[in-house]
Image (tube, helix red, strand yellow):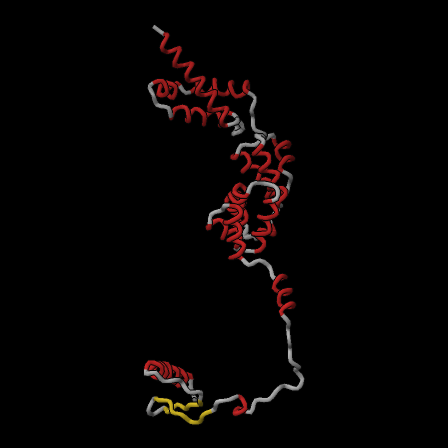
Length: 269
C-alpha cells in the first residue's frame, strides 16, 4: 500500500467482508491479502496458518521467563490500592457519599492526606473541610494537597478546637486561612489574635442588650410575631462581638431578652 488513504480503504473493505463471512456461517482465514486500488477490493495472496510459515525462531539471547504463582501473588500484594477500590472502601467503611469518596480517592496525595487526618478526627468532618475550605485555598494557588501548608495534624487540631467549643465554625474558617498563609499552629493563632469563642454569659448579655436597644424596629417585629427578628438581632450580636460569641448561647440570650421586652410591653398600660 502506498498511502494512508489506501490503508484506510482496505480496512473499511475488510470490516465489511469479514462480517459477511461470519454472518454466512464461515470462518475468517488467516492469510495475507493485497489491495487492488483500481477495483477497491482486497484479494487473497497467500495462506499462512502456523508460526513456522512466517519463519519465526526463538531469540537466543532471551531465555524463557517463567514466573510462578507465588511470585505473582507477591507482586500483586505490593501494588497500591487503586482509586476505584479506595473510593469503594471509603463508602463502605466510612459511610461517605460516592461523590465525596471519588473526590478524596481521585489522587493518591489527597487520599493519603485524608486517611492521615482520619486517624485523628471523624471521617465526614474531615471530608467536609478538605473538600470545602481547604480545597478552595489550594485551588486559589493552584497547589496540590501534598504541598499544603496545613498538615493533616494541624487540620485535626483545628477541628478539635471546634469540637471543644473554643472556636465556632465561622471562626475556624478564619483560623484556617491564617494557618494556610503562615503555616502556624491553630492554637497559637487563636491565642495571638484573640479569636477564641466567647462563652461568658455576662459578656454576651451586654452585647444582646446593646443590640436590642439599637434596633427597636426588630424588637417590635418580634413582639408582633415575626420570629425571624431574633435571627437578625443575633446577627447584630455576632457583629458586636466580632463573630466570637458562641452562636447557640447568643441566640438563647437574644430570645430571652426579646421575651423580656414582650412581657414588659404587655404590662404597660
